[in-house]
Structures are given as C-alpha cells and as structure tokens.
Length: 137
Image (cartoon, rainbow, N blue to C red; front, side, top):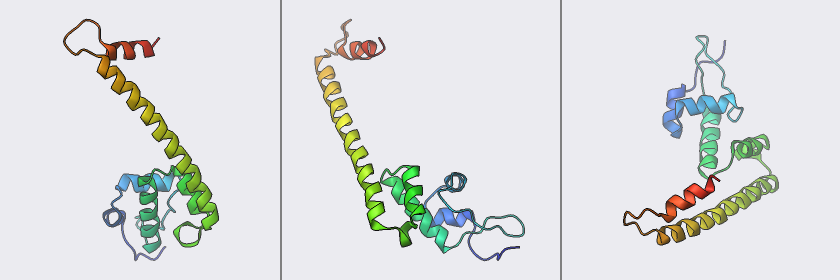
C-alpha cells in the first residue's frame, strides 16, 4: 500500500491544463512517470508530476515531438538536464521548424498564384480545380 497523500488525476489536469486522457496517454508512452496508486487503485500524483506535466505541455506547445520530450526528460528533465544535450535537441527541432516554414512559403506562393489565375465567375475552367486535379495524376 502506498502513501495516499497527493493529488488525483482530475486535480492534476486542472492545475496543468492537460486533459485527463492526455495525461494517461503520456503515461502509456513513457513521457510522464507513472504515479503510485492508492490501496483502492487510484493514481496519486505529486509535485514532481505537476512540474513534469507542465514541462511536457509547454514543450509540445513549442512543437517538440514526443520523442524529443522523452529525450530531454531522460537527460534529467527540467531539473537536471545538460544544457549542451538539450541544445542539440532544440537545434534539431529548430531545423525542422525552419524546413516547415520554407514549405509553407512555397505552398502560400503556389496557392496565391493559382487563386489569382482563377476567374471565379462560374467559368468552366478553374485554376484551383486544375491544380487539385493535376496533383492526383
């Protein structure tokens, strides 16, 4: 039997702004340490879970992948991770973000030029339809 002090999953969710099912998911995939259980089988979370979950939530908001987050946590998390190792992970993430941004700029240019060629007056030829139709060939 474990010490039954601590907070329940609903309270953890409220404090961190993370959905209960998402908390369970993070536990399942090993991103969040599984908590001890009461004698009745209920999960009991502590301050370390609150901090870790807030850290995970913020990292995900910044677009870090679950694998990135697990890697940072495996290095010691917010309390003990080596800045040098975390920097490498963040640098790799920044490279991915910049690549996505370049892809979005190309997409914006293509869509803008296609929409500009579209007459939009009920004509039988439509540049947008042609773009979508040609992509499938």
